[in-house]
Image (tube, rainbow, N blue to C red; front, side, top):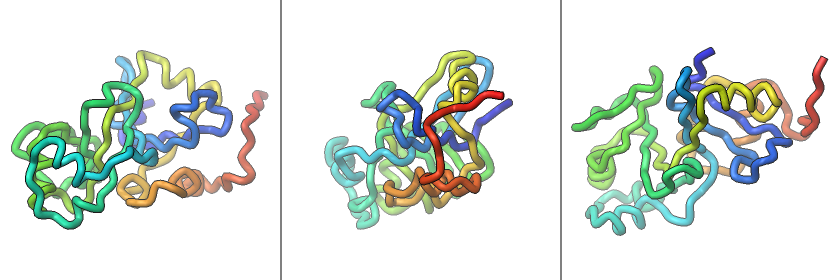
Length: 184
């Protein structure tokens, strides 16, 4: 089962506080493991502040308001931009699925700063990673649910409510979800 381009939705009994109520977009998944970006954990800075820190001049009012998110606990100084496919970067980008592309180069930040970036984008610091078979085991242990990715959840600017919205994609009301797993 290849979950590339899908959402992982943390179950209430996840057990790892770093992923509590997380919604993760999976950028890659295969026999070598998985890599994803949390789309609903805000960082303590916005894109404008990040551009200043990187000494990238910005004339974009939209960038000034855009949030930066914590993509996961691995390599938190490394940035990733998950974006719509309308943007063709100068350097390498990874097409994850028909509606999502990931770029991890400075050229996309420079283009965002000049309002030449993608129509929709989410910037994350760090990523979430799993070794071979690790994610499958966590799913089997009732740690995660999976759903098709929804651009409004992935790119939406309000992080509160994304977990509940992701559960609703599966027809699940968060108030009725139990932290206990049952096995037949």
